[in-house]
Image 1 (cartoon, rainbow, N blue to C red):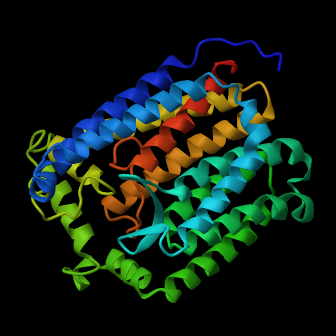
Image 2: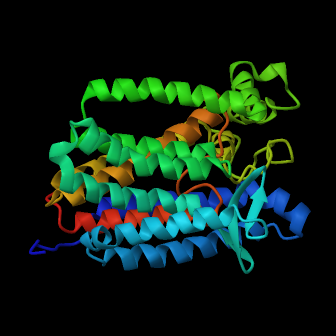
Length: 366
């Protein structure tokens, strides 16, 4: 397309690398004790995270130089591939189960989580649909239902694993995209009621989800069971105070907070770096959100706007849920903190998504 190309958004790139660097440090700090005990190598998780980061950075720079409208052309193929992988995960002997969820497919010594990549594929596909059918988005038959139909099909596949956290992020991201496209508030109110009813149904259908709700309301009702994680997380955040106990000085990582390098890494960060460190991380995410919105507003076409909005919404929703869970403001869900939590699929996916956003920024009027 005849769009003028320039340099990518330097601030967006700088913030991404800053968060990534802090994440690598915190993964080592949070995991060293557990890694030394389990693998006799305190750098076990840190080395793997560095490898994931290296793969993600290479992918990010490659994608940054691929014109973003290419994703519009291949979005259907990407969604189909992700659906095939979501089916494959459910096949006995293919999918790998961790912490009660069959969400991974083993590839040699590593594994991938197809639901993570479905989030980005769905953003690319929905951006294509909305950019081509924006005038119909105010209608239910031609706009709202077609745009949400595939989203909820993917959500259903993810819930079979089950993985409520990833599914919630994907649906939330797509809802934001549809709202930005101009869907009617009345339609969203109706969908909101359906969503609440569906959420209640999902909670009631699985006893462990109900325990998470009750432990969120009163974690001390089951301090050694469903309330254990959130209590230990608060025990980490509280003593951190204003300036923290010092980098590497966490007490909760000594087998109190389970696997602190993953979903609850923000608790360890707050314990070691205090309120100041936690606030700095949130400010960095705020800058990332600001630059992403600027890229979306300055994109030269609707597809660029929608795919940028989708990516930045995905990051923002994931951050809000993760921090909300860690601080006890939301029920526990398996959501990683972007760029900071340990996890190959999550980190690689986020860096790939930033690569797409950086490419849009090369054509945007910032």
